[in-house]
Length: 321
Image (cartoon, rainbow, N blue to C red; front, side):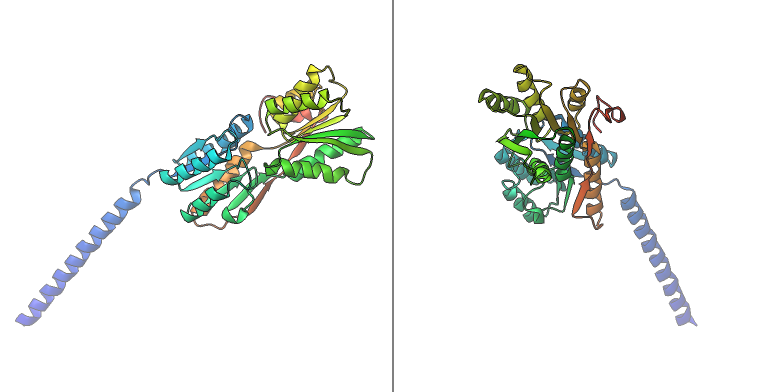
């Protein structure tokens, strides 16, 4: 009987110890569960912050990131690929958990993409394709090809024939796609001729200089396609300085407030509108989904809409879409 009592006492003690251990485990687990997670750090670098479009795109990403209690580091390479690569290396050193990249040079960014892959940092390619898409998780970009198609179709509906100047930027894939869409649409129709195609870096000041040179060369033309709105506005400034406005159809691509204002004033014929804030938000949401272990799409295409005087009232003039 005495041995039985000892055994019962031992069992009771073991049960009591087990309960205490279990309660301690539950307490510790719950404490960890309610401890706030350290904010996550994201990086972003765009080809230039000189274009307001990228401020809006960055703002869309930032809105989602900050709503999650995290923060975003944004860098401006000012159209220099070497500088952008260095910024990405620095972000890796700072311990970011993901990077949003809009490349200056779609091929020149490759060394930085490789560095991200080696550091196991996922890259989300926004707005403008990188050449090596196998090194990024997702590409979130406008339907750039269709933007060029829209401009060409509108031009053809208004002019039976035209001599066309294209202001592009070969190292920026988004602009290259737009130009290709335009050229493919007029291909095979001898009434529409490209009489000049020059690089303008996607910047207003450069486009103005290039357009001035074309005008001063004596070349005759009826239409200008700018690879983006700043390019179109730079061309417009040059054309206006030579008192040629009203005779030339000028197209841009962006749907920027300045572009829409120039449509209202009758100086710009049309602009194929992008949706940078929406694109930024989608990019950030895709990044969070991926970091949370969800499967995400490789290519996410954001539609574009041609804005002309005919549908301008459907858009806010002084705001981005």
